[in-house]
Structures are given as C-alpha cells and as structure tokens.
Length: 396
Image 1 (tube, rainbow, N blue to C red):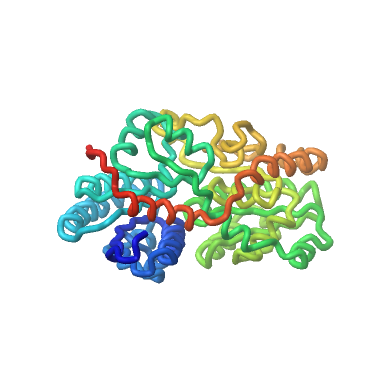
Image 2 (cartoon, rainbow, N blue to C red):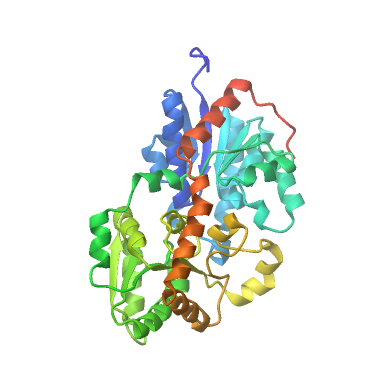
C-alpha cells in the first residue's frame, strides 16, 4: 500500500463476545500493516481495548435463538443509527464479523453508502435452507468474504461470491496453549477413566445441556468407581451455575471444576472421553484428538415447528461436518432423555480400540486444516481491497 495514502477509516461490527475477540485480533493485525488506521463501529470491550471507537455494544447481553427476539427493537434502532452514521461519515471499508442476522443488514447499509464490505467469519449459508436467497444477499452485500472453513471457499465461488479461506481464528489460541504434561498427569493420577465435561460458555446453553451431561456422568460413575469428572467453567457466572445445578440434582457427582485456557487444554488432553456442548469448543476437543460425544438440547417444539425446515446439513457438529460423516456421536438438536447417550458413552469407554480409532480419525480431519494467522490473513484481504479499489457492484 502506498505510504502516502491517507489513513484508512474502517467501520467494523461484532455483536457477540466471541466475535468481539476475533474482531479485536483483526484490528490488531491490520494495524500492524497500517498503524494509522482508525476503527469505529459496533464494538465490545476487546475491540475497544484494541482501539476501536464504539458507537454501540451488544456483546454484554448477546443472545441466541428465542432469547434474541427481545433484542429486535434494539437492533432496529441501531440499524437506523448506522444508516445516519454512514451518511454523515465517510469510510474506506466496512468489516462484518459473524452474526449474519444483524451484520448482513448493516452490510446492506454500507454498500448503499458506496462502502466496500469484507465479511470475516462468513455466514454459514451452506447449513441452512433457502441457499439461493441467502447467497444472493451475501453476493450483493459483500465485496470479499474471508471464510474460516476450507470447504467454504469453493462453495461460495460456485455462487459467484469472492471468497478466500483464511483459517480458523481458534487455531492461533490453540497452538499458543499446548496442554501442560504435568497438569495432564495430575488430572489422570489415580483415575480411570477421566471424563471432561464442557457445558458451554453461555448460561442458557449450560442450563440446557449440563443437566444431561450430569446424568451421563452418573451412569459412568456407577460403572467406573475410579472415574474422574473435570468440568470447564468459562467464567465465574458459569462456575456458579455448574455448582448450583449439581447441588440441586437428584444425586450429586464429584466434580473438579477448572477455569482458564491452560487448565481447559490439560483437562481435554487428559480425558479418555469428553461430553461437549455443541459449538466451537468441539474444534478444540478435536484439535487435541480427544474422543467426544456432542450434545445440544434445544426446545423440541421450536425445532420441529421451525428449525427442521431451515437446517439442511446431514451432520450438525463441527467434526462431523468437516469429515462429511459421523466420526463422533452427536445427540442434537435435542434429546428426550439421556439413556442412549449414557449407553454410547459406556460402550466407548469399554472399547479402548474404538477410542484410539476415533483419535486417529480426528487427527486425519483436523491436522490438514490447522492454519495459524487467521486474523492476519483476513487483514491481508482487507489491505488488498483497499489497494485494488472496491470493484463495486450495485447493492440491493
């Protein structure tokens, strides 16, 4: 980029905590290229700490599914505010991070204002129905797409969307946090088997999934007297919720609760089996080649009325989507009871050869896609956009 070029003015939008962290890493990576760049937009605490001026913040109360309905009026107010903002302040580019329900409308506003749009962490239109309609919107409202899964690049190309695979942002964190062998040995000492329980980072997910995980843990404890159960708590609120749910269950389970990335890495690496709430954390478990059972227990009525008409992928968990087949058991999007899950867990624990085969299959799936520097790769895409010009298409 020409050193005499004026400082880039970038609008950036992230609506959830994880997106806030990814956006902060993106801002830091781009400023290594252009220290004079200024960022403004929908920004959480991590983005603000990275130097982004916040027009609004949705990360502290981000929600999913039915909980998001209550935030519609707030989102509409923000869209109106951003429309006025783009009319008032010029920008060289806009960057959308995940959250397509909100960010695609923001992208439309930016495109109508003549601002080129980079979408980082692309909308997962491949997982949902009405692909033609969804991809038509993505094509019209974006200039470039930086996608985090290798199969997304050719998929978007088929729909005429300029996409580039940049790697998954979680790999930087995972590569920087190897499991400490001493801590792994401590977790495994005098225990057989070791079960890692990962109930999620959002309180409503913990409430939906952790009670079922406890039921499976009780079944394992009844069969294996030396079993150890290590639960990862994403934060203090989740820790308190874990303790409360266990204390009020019909029969408590002896739990070791850990927090922090280092202890989570060691707990996963030490585990013979992990009980995992569906989400990005399944990528971490697969990265550490730990056999797992993926669980999610959404509202059954809501799914049958609405969800099943929109979700079109054969598999729902990340390891199985990447493999194109079921390599880990998934009980999603809901389960009536945990009897089948407990039976599968006991079956796996009683067959070490099958656990070893799952570890090897996870290695085969994950190892080829481990690519560090996702934020820096995405920042390079933005730099290319600014250097080459917008190459604008009319928005719609």
